[in-house]
Amino acid sequence: MPTGGRTWGGTTLDDRKATRREQLVEAALDLLGTEGSAAVSVRAVCRRAKLTERYFYESFADREELVLAVYEFVGDRARKALVHAVAAAPADERAKAKAAVHAFVELIVDDPRQGRVLLLAPLTDPALSERGVAMLPAFTELVRAQLSEKAGAEDRELTAIALVGALTNLFIAYLNGTVAVSRERLVAHCVRLVLGANALHS
Image 1 (tube, rainbow, N blue to C red):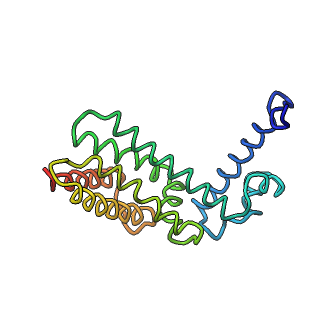
Image 2: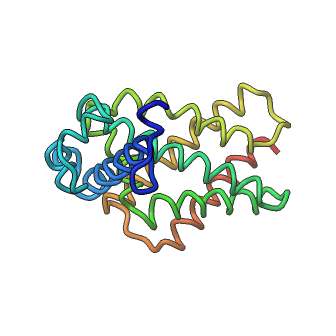
């Protein structure tokens, strides 16, 4: 039997390794999302996770690999939240727009750590700058898919890119305190933006 499949105390070595990796990702998410990029070091993450550096290098080659893993984790969670929200909403433009906005707000505003990782960290952490740009097309495609097909594919693509840029900057301003409005006002405004963009193609 492979070493990873042997059990001690009812769990395998692979299970315990996966658990330790999750602890490290959660610790890095907490540091990156509350104290910023400068706070994330191998030593700080291990201290927050209550693990030794030996276990850090069991899962990650270096600090940059961990930061990328955290970003991918939050980005994947955001994509899934949006997809599930839109799929579960009634087949109505307003309902789908509200569902998508509410899902995104719940993810990045109700847990601002995740919002800061997804939107603010790529602006300050060199390890995330390129990945942040690379992730934008996935969100653009989610928005483009909700736009009316009465317009051509090129127009929908341009509108989706513009809308993602507008919403991204709005959420960044909200998270860093530049925009001080209630959560409800933020959601309502974002829904109007989405519906207004779709109206361009009605």
